[in-house]
Length: 219
Ligand SMILES: Nc1ncnc2c1ncn2[C@@H]1O[C@H](COP(=O)(O)OP(=O)(O)OP(=O)(O)O)[C@@H](O)[C@H]1O
Ligand SMILES: [Mg+2]
Image (cartoon, rainbow, N blue to C red):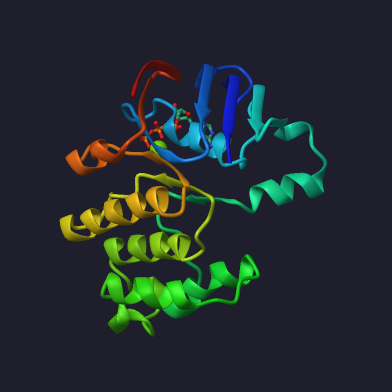
């Protein structure tokens, strides 16, 4: 899936622009890193890229089609290929297993193989029956991440995925991101304050955003 933001501007209140004149091309496959200080517009940019927020101005061209001009059915179709994982872990009432399966239910997928794989890989077997509201911050975060990974989306958009994660799990997540791109030819877009060496090594492009504008991009 190719995502092309063209002259995108965004304002939440109709007067101050928190994103200005954004032109970005996310090609079919690769790892794109978005960096920049607090409040610079990373989350807003990710939500626009994920098709959650309609930008105040400009276009989001998905596979050559201007997304916000499409009819609702076509929009839903394209949206279903993109998963956005919030910076703060969002879980529903119920146990961990229920939360992991929720993604599958919403996407109408049946194959649980990847859920099992990631539960073992991230050593979460003991937590399966634990209530979601009794998890530590890092435990909750890793659950939301593997819920997304298990769905194997074409496009995975991660907002501060390493916040709350210990170093071992951060390393594992970087390996998994690499696999998505190398093996599945997926597209992964990440906003992060943590610039790990391993992450930099696998990145296609780094995009620095300051005060709502792209400061520089680096291949
Ligand atoms: N829902 C909202 N309503 C109004 N203003 C908002 C909203 N969300 C974000 N903003 C404002 O937009 C600007 C950009 O915020 P955004 O969350 O995109 O930054 P960020 O780069 O992700 O920051 P952080 O590194 O802290 O996550 C900030 O000035 C913020 O106050
Ligand atoms: Mg943010």
